[in-house]
Length: 68
Image 1 (cartoon, one colour):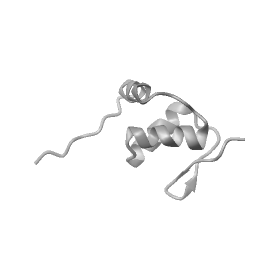
Image 2: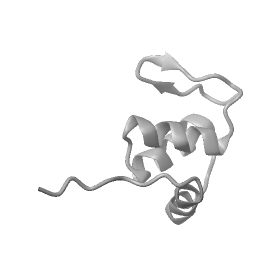
Image 3: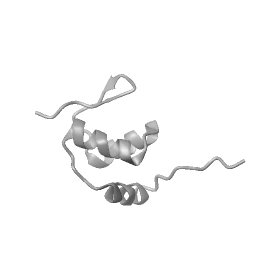
């Protein structure tokens, strides 16, 4: 049985797929390496760091740099 994930103290629903989980963790503010760790340890999903970068780009999710 896979362990449930938690974000902000709330349990994640079972209906989230891999891409939904990546987008959710990204929006919460986790780094790609942190997302990778959550996918492996909490959801049993093993993919590479590079593949997460590709998926984020495909979903048009990018971090903005605050340059002053």
